[in-house]
Length: 420
Image 1 (tube, helix red, strand yellow):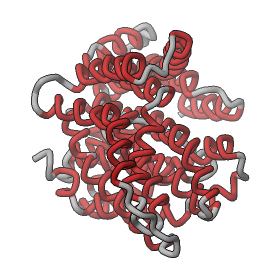
Image 2 (cartoon, one colour):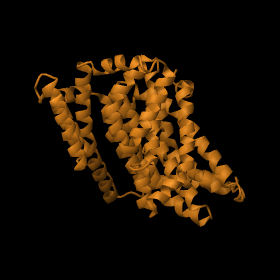
Image 3 (cartoon, rainbow, N blue to C red):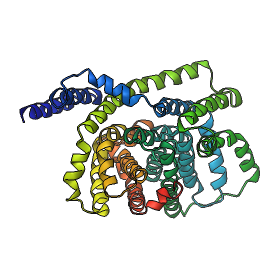
Image 4 (spheres, rainbow, N blue to C red):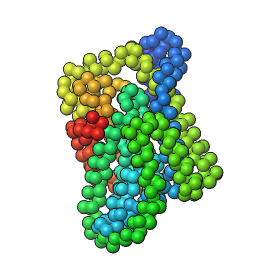
């Protein structure tokens, strides 16, 4: 009892002092190995090394590097130009172009925050200049920016696959249906709420010119996903292909990225990985320890009688993860919770791939909920707007995303149709 109370007090103290997750996880891991394990703290390193010795982990730094290359280069403006040309003949076409641009660029970059910054920097001034309300412009960019979390290639889906030993290729494929659903819901709302705007005349020459300019960027998700599912390369190999392709397009085709830009992108990616991978290693070590101590099995046994149906379990986990998303970033939540929650879901007959999509969609909503919603904070800085103004702006889109979450939760075929 006293060791557990001491550990809880130490964790609370570290949180109060705003120490990072690596410190907290390190303390918890050391305590677990000493008190409940064999007393050898050095086994944290051994278990972390054994757990991390997987090829799929290489895909994380490579996809992050590819996304940073494309966000710093010329792909985003060219994709936006194409989406604007296609949607111009529809009333409220610029609003639709905003949603489509976020969805397409998310499929290229794999990052919600990168999508918000890359697309928002161009589309927010354009929306305001065209007469769209500040509330819609902020809400649409913040919400559509989160599509990068569920659109393959998604770093959170890779993390879930690593922590639960679920096929990353299957998770990528399962994310397509839910991503299309969320995109469709946002487009319908954009049409309805901006139906008073006049449509522009269709310009075939502009569409053709925009297509020629953006074709290299459009080919990116086709090459990545097509290569995976045709069997030409694995998910990890596709990440390497993405980096090479991004370098080729940005430096030799568009020629808008020089040596200094490339150095800045690599340095930024390295800093990000320096904060991510130590946390990932400690989390993997704890995962091995928990599995050895049969903690997931014990939790499943304890809760099976209380949550006696898949419906009750999904509702309970959804509510729990929505609350977690308000106070914890998506990577940390997946690293800590997925090894515990996934066996519980599997015990109720929920497919691990389907559950991975449910978990990531829940935490995706956390990007838009205070106090720690990442896209809210990024938008506040990028667009120089008040935090609570942005919070109010995303409310309609939060409702849409909750509708999407409930639909995917109770319609497994939407996620698993392409997989199975």
